[in-house]
Length: 231
Image (cartoon, rainbow, N blue to C red; front, side):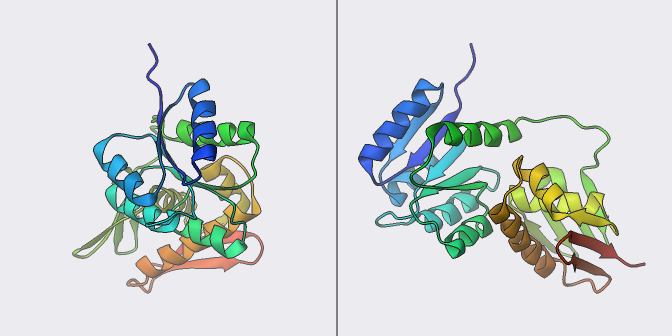
């Protein structure tokens, strides 16, 4: 018997919430619906979920605040925003919080289902013996399997996407990592806003790596980035 994937849906529009819950359950998912951010966080803490779908405009705790709380509870939980807000700044903020996708209303249910399945497939462990899990970056140590970056006596826990971006940079150290190739490898598709979110993760990694002057993540205009580590 196949275990159903569990989805936490936090949506303050109950009509939308019930319709979407019913659609997802008809397609084989176990869905828990909450109508505000606080109840969503409480429900998340009481159970195990494979994916979270968050509305942005909610009372008491909005989707962005909830996303930050979820990331502090579980750095690896995938989540996507489902919202009527389509402004570029909102999308970039969502991705900077570690969102795996951002879908605006109204949306096509089949497209949403496809995106959910892509995110869930990424959670399935795949053994790739040839791909290293630990990297040395100048005076830093990066453990991809634990999503940890260490320098001297400090250790930072990265989000899943941050760890994936840094892994790709490490695998291409001192070579160009094309932005569109990286976005496709991480998200399974090419998309302008996902490309911009990739830039946000690069900025975060630059700040974390700033303690070692031999390390730089250099921009290659309209192409991508290079993780340069000098001797």
